[in-house]
Image (tube, rainbow, N blue to C red):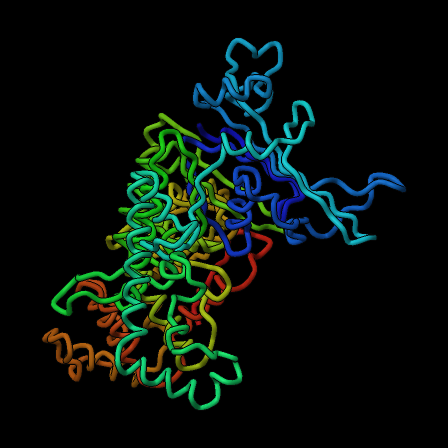
Length: 573
């Protein structure tokens, strides 16, 4: 079973959006773009318990719509899900509810498309809110007939929801308890009965131990026995001990697992840290999701895991489930999915939207998508990406931005939702910029580009192409690359002090005192280019004072709203 289409109408942050996932779906996006809302919407339809509790008024899209007429309420809040590839037994049980579905649109097939149609099921969660009385009701129905779906029928197509429960807990309704019961419930019940009897025997021995017995007698003799009318021959016999309410459930609630992970021996799970708990909880979820054809829904997957564990467990979950819907902030989780399964949510002009990469056999497009994991995944939660030519550019601008923040409390581009990204890992990559800009645009990023200008007149075609792909192209002055950006306009004494420190600390073998003032800037630029990237150490070595003006102008341009014209020319100070 899998979700072919989900439509959210006036649900939370979504005015109207339809998503057709690939085989699986991993959801990322900008802050407040609806990552959690999408997962909650799926839960409203696919979790049979969703309509047991009171409706959540936060599910109603704001601002509220006006009434359809003078007496009627506004448009309903809806989440509609189309399911296909149902299990044979489920199809038989729900035979009267099934309909022909167009596999391309996820909607009921028309007569012309009936030959390619597949059997499927549509379910819709609906919430009606009356603002005048501040009352609401919600239910799940079959759109085909308008009949409300009974709980028993919803159970047949329910998803497995990954909640953040404590792992390895035997208390009632826990995931681990359910898994144990599914393996051998009879043995579990017999074992719990034995535990209950053993606990009763142990507490009975506790009550008759000499110290406990004598203390009970002293308490009763101090007046409690008379006031409570405990007048038997030996009232101490009438006092015993049980765990909380006396049930085996009370005992199980207090039990927690222990792990022996090193020489410290067996320690409670809480003593091993949050990552250990997260790993066990995720693995427990993977086991519970191993039913053939199961749909698994989880929000913020990997938040409590380290990078390697997040990626590995996401791979296992995707492999073991019929279909996975995971939202995440972790790029490592997304690595477990091919690019076509990534759903990126964006927020623009107050509206939530989504972007997906279609399946493609185009070699150039596939080659460009290889840049997704190393370059764009770390920026997936940003609104804007600023594409730089290479790693030296990224190091240099980041160093200036960090130092301005520390010394002058001036916010970097990241504070404005702009993530700087190097187009390639080497010294430069102008040729890669259009490919990366196009890919970022397809994923819904606002795209900006910072372009060197070390060979004036040679990049006219590139600039024109980038202007069509990016909202802003920041071009440096003629004969200027990142090294000149970090040096030009800085006072000579500060340049000399910083260069001397870098030469000394990195044993460059340069006699700085022998360099004239006229040649100092050129010598520093040459050293930064040839000495394996000393851009960040050079910025940190600068004495207190104004930061490189060209770098400041570039960072400020990236932090401001885009200009009416895409091309922004940076001038020499």
